[in-house]
Image 1: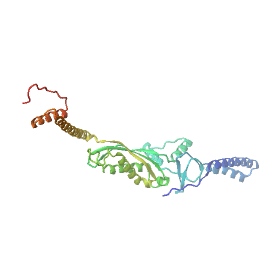
Image 2: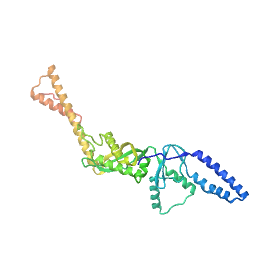
Image 3: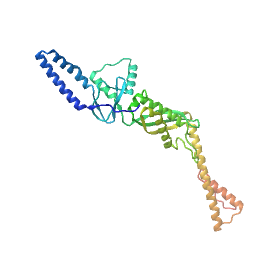
Image 4: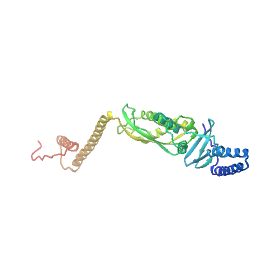
Length: 323
């Protein structure tokens, strides 16, 4: 359903004109009482008691980034947007599915309708029937989802969105906020199942932890496709929480620690091998000492133990011969 602009007039002009007419009707009423003219009295009372207050019901006030979705006898009349003071057909009624859903839930939970003062209740109802066009945030609760490798993880996202088509938001779905929440959960599960939580170093693959920006972009696109029919625009989607589920968190931590130890050992061995090779080349080039193959093997063994050891070395001074 396409959004259209509702027909409206300047609210301040209608307010002043109607107020003047009501004062005029009041003067006519008193003059009719003096002249005892029943027709004049009836017309003035009709305007004072019915028509004048009825015209006041068509006055609407809107703040920036607010809108009224108006219906006339069950049909979509138009959307009133923009800050200002407006006058619309008094028979038009504003509708907001979010407010109506909350109102129905509150009635069910309380089991009775609590009566308030008519003026305060009417003002509060008009305020809640407005559609907010502001940028809003939907915070998704943490969910337990299996990643591509089948590992259960806990993930939470936040979605920044706003209403861009009020007609679709009101008439295409039952409650656009609940619709957004459900579609966000669905898109999150579909996207998370496509990626592993993490990938080992050296493997050029996308993961939830290593490619969070790409995953967030795909989440935004997936949610946008689903909520287009509700007239919503997804401005941004971000991952706010990502961790392994509690039942496998300890095991995955041990695996990460083991992987880190192995990577560190590989780096140490590569560095130690280069240092031993450099030491032997320097000794041979400068002819500091001439070593046979057996002495070279023993020297390599000692250097590798010293360089790859995890504890401080304790040198032993040999005062005799090595044979």
